[in-house]
Length: 542
Image (cartoon, rainbow, N blue to C red):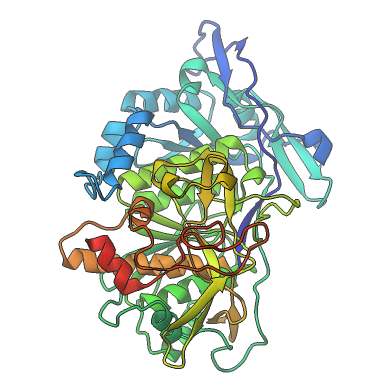
């Protein structure tokens, strides 16, 4: 099963030309005329073609926004991340603290004050200034937001779904000096609709539901009983909640003795339980299956673009070294500025030693569902490990037997990101010089899926939503071994995984996800393949 952040808005139009309009930097103080500049890529395209205009947003409606700022010395940040994540570099593993990151790459306190002063002068309330000085939360009425960002908020009805939403008519603008700092203003539209595909389940049973058990997953991927994830932390990004009683039932059935997950609500949380509950419980239970003693924190945010950015940032703020992500959307379904904002959070995480593992999607080579080839974001982000899907077969003694590519596993080439340096050694002509997905893979086939207990019954659930936490669990196990050896956490894993050149992986050479077929070495269906935990950990530890 793959949960999707189903964004109905299309890619952004080019930035509007800067226009001279009056502005005030302090309430009640007359200021000279000042130029304003548009935030590029921050408006939905084709509203008049894909939706019907129904009116204006009520002036008094309160709306929250998350304002992303471009990193200071961005090229230097790229260089730093390249060195700190490269196992061949003397800087490998020498990550920055949150304070060090803010000092080197965050916006200055004076720049943050400039933005805050401007927002407050427009009547907005300024909320959290997140670690790194690259994300500022604010809120106000629709009228105040329209004034602050020089745009109009209108109401619309989607032509396909009939869903009502609001959106900014034009790209937001800011005084030029401030606009040069800002990369995205999330929250000016709510066309984003969080959605996930229905779970692939068998008929519920009183037993484990027909899916793979913890013993089968650990045996198949050669996870030593010596390592349990003890002392390690894993984060989950979620847009729905869970019931602890279901997690307890799962843990008790398999005698796992796992710590109770902690919940951290972001921007008020995800609201009442929805059909994404199965997704959240799958993620938690897979982590418990492979790394039963790791401490899991579930970050629950609202299903909106502002909620997404804030939830990722909350994870970076927490410093939790490993994150599993089962929510995403096709690259073509996102605005340019939204991708840039999320990418900046991942890059900051990489600099601070944090690793993100994202499901590559459950729609094979056609993630957008438009008959072409496309990939899922954030799995395609250059600072994320994209996890594809396989069908694992184990022996009667729970050892790895064989593995083939799962037909639904997402994979292909990015249309946004150029190929990163650590991937050029496996560059394929079909990639066209762009980022290639996935990086790795794990069991995802729904038949058999993974045995889980959710909503009061046992079932078998599949999809790359199971594969992503399978890899996040491995990272926690590795970090436990690294800590014992006095080594740094794995952090952003891709440079090290690619440097391993296939050592420690089950190379999957059969199966297809549509337009791509598995082959020897790295491929567009399974990346490097699934892990042999003992062998791969040994390779990474050197």
